Image 1: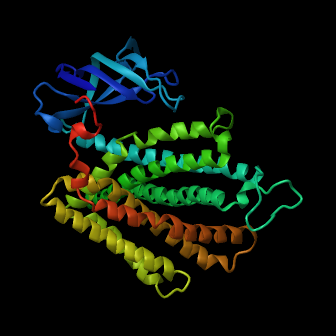
Image 2: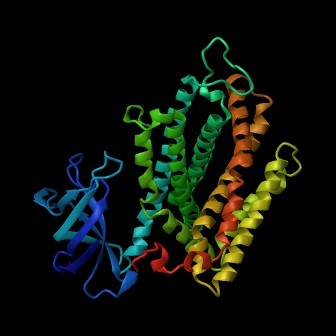
Image 3: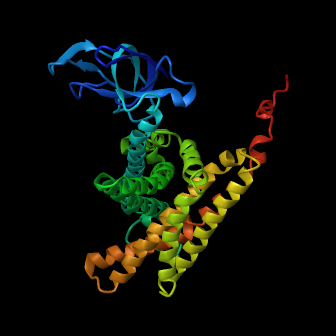
Length: 431
């Protein structure tokens, strides 16, 4: 992508020249007009990202009298052939003397764009969550209907030729992973949505800035982790179907194909990881300021639940991992002072560790509410709270231990990543 802009002066508009690719729904006939938000460089702009401005560019220019021109302002040069999301017209666009309108200040476009991108990243996290839920909703009915083999502990349905596969532990494992990620992820997204609502209603800059900081810490975790977990959820959706998950007739392969884009949209997982460890942890003033605030919130919850015999197992494990989360940041910060590549080497595993800790916090809170209510509940309500408690137990026993592996991997250092010579990635006998 490369877009340049020129100021026309008289009417305050600009003219844009260049091309862009991978524009989701970049051209379609669903609406009478399409408004594009475009980053471009002015002729006298400073080099690098400090010289990028943000522009509003319509498909059709709106005239001064409110009528819409019938002349194309943007040319569609092609529609991408993609792995999935075939319902989205992903377009390549050409800007040739295209009319644009400056958004915000010149040369501050990247900062302005982050206002759009942060909400788009939360939207992509929601897409990942939807994928997990969709895969789970398709997996569960199949597992409750499909018969194969007998349960290892003995026949569960002796009047049938085989037991339904939902009795098999490995099938339960896959369903519970989907359920834990879907319900835990939904709670995480609700927290972000609540902050977004508070941001819209904030009545002072200080309140707005504080909420933006809190939401900013959550955003790369939501976008990075929920989309990675969505691919895992889609994978298990195919697995429980066996060979029937690979064919088009059941739709599970479409979920897997459509899920894949979410880790690429609005910055890949690697970009989210660098944003998390770089902008949200190490370079805040003071370093780790946002993380410490969030960690204190977790630790207060843990302290208040240590005396509860039903909640203390959650509180002890979550408290230990939260302290380790802070120690991990401090350790990376110390090593990065003499080896800057440490940040990039540790970023992915640090992001995933953060995600597992945050989801563990949400599951502990849900377990606390469920424990308080299940005793007096009856019927479907009791089943609901019981399922919440059991899913929380599964998350803590089976999924949360992954965090330990990510912590160890994050501290391996840059040497093991960078020591291999480029030409040795493949050994060519003729070289």
